[in-house]
Length: 350
Image 1 (cartoon, rainbow, N blue to C red):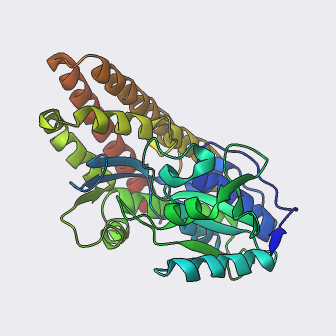
Image 2: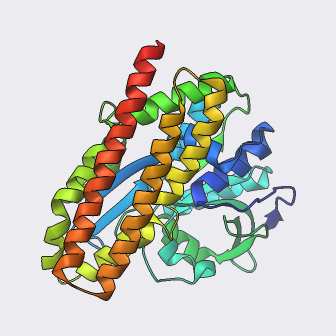
């Protein structure tokens, strides 16, 4: 048995999840969003700090939210849900049926195990890509990823390993389904809803992101913090990384996540600034020019941090450790100021 959804249009983007949702929403709902709009409506700007001795590396520092893909549809009032499945065989049969019915389907997995992306290198859990076909005879899944308009082929074994790996983190064969294609919120209401949710998560009013991460990391002894609290823990822990034998791996992963892998840092903050520029037309009482300027400044500080971390990898010097630590403090202060400013603007607009 084999099939291919040939009319699925895969427009490349900067980040896997926002690219996939941009294309899926266009396909299912006939709503064309830019990637910055997906980032903003999905409340994607966040910070996640996870320390687990079983991880590789032991510390994961991610600059995006865990639930952006669901959150963008929630903001728009679209009924889209994501379902985990502990049974690998059943999980594969379910998504095959979706594709056989002509429905492109969101998948989640660890890039480390995906053969078409080189297989190996680094663990990147919760990578997003879209299943658009399969060929049982050749044991190949056909997927749309963020980097090219064309589709990629992935072996069934590699896909299964990616979707539910033993370590470091599994999203347990997570897949997504559009139960309705109706967009129930106006763009103005969606923008307002999303900005408020971002502020509440970054400032710790909404603790759902941290609670969800704890559910996905199992019962191991894990240190988890998100939002401003996550950046605070990052700042507090950073100088202690030097005592770890694998500190270079931890630092390199952090640097790459902030910029190269497109999982937050300067990349997401710049797109969020573009989103706020669009939001200003709908919500001038909430989004002012200061909000946009502050977001752009924060983006630059994240990029500088990535550069300092790269320098530290090259030169293990006391001065470089403290330069990085100081830069994390700058990021912390400016992120806090940005979301406090937006919080005040939201309150004044009520």
